[in-house]
Image 1 (tube, one colour):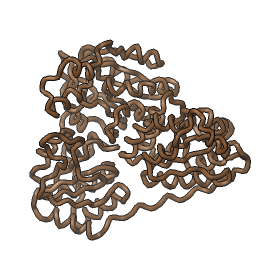
Image 2 (tube, one colour):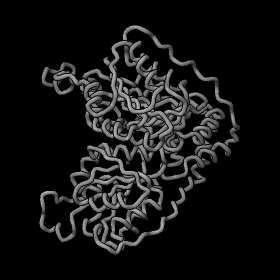
Image 3 (tube, helix red, strand yellow):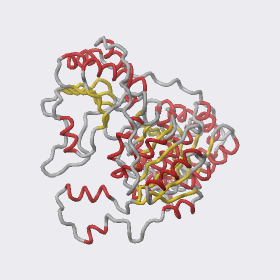
Image 4 (cartoon, rainbow, N blue to C red):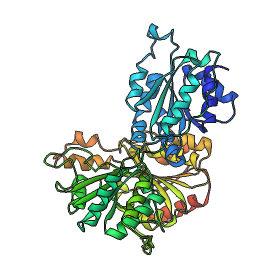
Length: 511
């Protein structure tokens, strides 16, 4: 058994079932091992940003890691933007990064790079394999590291992968989550008993069903408001679930939303800060006199902390209020809001939404509180090009659930190769492209930093009309059936059809 085979078998024994891959020459022994040893599903991505983003979507929904297979430093670098998003989402991922053979490295061949330096930028768990005999043990420890919400970057020299002498390692037990401090739980209870305006600021597992139910008990008993971070990794939404207000993206709106709170109990999220600095505007978004209690961070048992706090407050189980009515679908001129109304009315029960709609989706976010129960995945780290790959990975993790990708046109161009993989794997994903032919968010940001009258050269850097993007052609060229909607009625017809059929489908919405 060679090193690659021992590593692969160890990963399979540890529950890693999927490898999103864009391999090169240095990874051929791992490719051969996947072919030889059953148990690992290989999924090819045509760009490393698709590979890493898909691993992120998979990990968010499966709650366990997929592997990626990446080629040397440049291949890893191509995937780094979506690894940044995955890091912010605390997604478990094992990145297997091939490197040159140890005796070839000193020759400084064209693809030689500082792979260790690259890998260290996205994770604090990085391991360079030191021998064929230890490769599998490195893999077992990588799995254990990911179960604490980390990425594990495992660098494999090619000669260790092809050499004989590999030894399969036993899987390690996942580490137990750290418990929240009892004094902090007491401090949170005292703050909530004060009668002063308070909020629960939620992220992570606090936005899953058990966490939401405990938070809702606390909110009902104390009057505290439930607010989520701007871009949560995964929030369970829809009918028969507690409604959580999302903190606005724009800093001044967030400041206004938080201005009256005297206490903020943060669970699974850090206290909120502005995404960027702006002239004359604050970077921290909570009031200066607000008391911040960090009940539990991402690496701690957030659900247990919320349940302990609810019990300490003697907060009873309470029935949810009646769901609000679904938004009315207004026929006539199509807007991003009418598109959102159609989607909210028609998504099936237990669907998954990968949201990178950006400015086109911001005003319809609340519509989905009354939709069928679903999971919502957001652009956690702000590095665009996440929506399509995350939808891909979520569909691999949950093949029995419909996945809907709400996708802005500009950011879709970063990773449009994901469409090819969706077609190749026949994944049940419906992509809704909001085609406004612009980096609309940047037009807004230009004004917000004080540029009131941008010239033609500045404007040309933000528009996507010369030439226009033809998304139906792009999609069909990669094997995904596509349609175009110019009215709400057309979109409703196309979306309803997509919800009733299996397989990948793209709908281009002309705004």
